[in-house]
Amino acid sequence: MTLFRRTALIGASLLAFGASTAHAQEADTYPNKPIKIVVPYSPGGFTDILARQMSQQLSQKLSQPVVVENKPGAGTIIGAETVARAKPDGYTLLMAVTTTLSSNPHLFSKLPYKVSDFKPIALTGLTPFVLVANPSVPANNVRELIELARKEPGKLSGATLGNGSSTHLVLSMLRGATGADILDVPYKGASPASTDLVAGHVDLFFDAITTSLPHIKEGRLKAIAMTSEKRSEAAPSIPTFREEGVPEMLAYSWYGLLAPAGTPDAITEKLNKVVNEALASPEIQEKFRTEGAESRPMSAKAFGDLIEEHSQIWGKVIKSLNIRLD
Image (cartoon, rainbow, N blue to C red):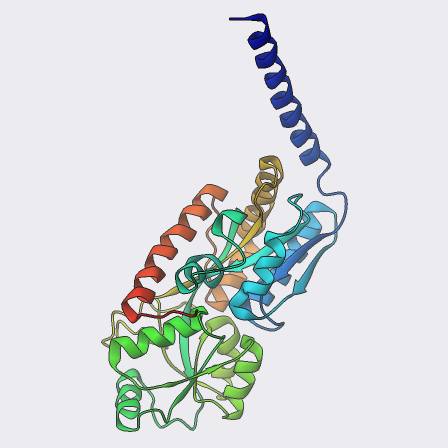
């Protein structure tokens, strides 16, 4: 080996060691200022609620303020793009959802971000959907709903969170599986969609059990069926679509924290540890159980694998229904 090559190798090794040491030191002092979690939806929906619950837990465990900033619009694209372009230092995070990384890449040929622009931190929640209806809808189960939609095509309207959102895809899945003709009415967030549903301005909505259960219990909405494998402990009286004879209607939405690509491993590993500690707490476990959500503490790599798994699932649905948004 020449002296020049030996010197170059030593220099490269010292640079790598220096970078590794710097990242480790950065993690030791992280965080030393407020952290921002960008939510790509308007306030009030389950994504926003979950982000605010996690921000409280992280604030306590990291001894720094963790604030939530809502950036709704364009099927989570606006919020996601904001974080993709942020400095990869762990101070700007994204509360991503299924739409962001598991379905949008299949719906758009051009996105202002790529899956590789993000670094998974931790899965924060997993929820099935519940199909809820305004009490004025003359159908109380899946069979009656399908018959009504076929008898009067286009009369029933279903709220969604916009083209390409999980709610849009699940409604499309229902139409594809049953032939039900239901009008798609897009909203900018779950809160305004739920408000209009209760007011009777729209007939149906595939919502999170978390936000719809209070309305169901008080009679402002009625539940038709859930997209889970089995009945929810939070609402054991609500049947699944599988029980109702539509096994194709099996769908979940994931929620999780991601950082911009390039964020040091030491920082994302620290955040993963703190998030999983919060998820494993009896308080969070009980809250998730009563609200019909599921927490699965896992490594950042496992979360990345889950994102890819759901990408394959939704990709097949999107392709089979020939849905494109550009």
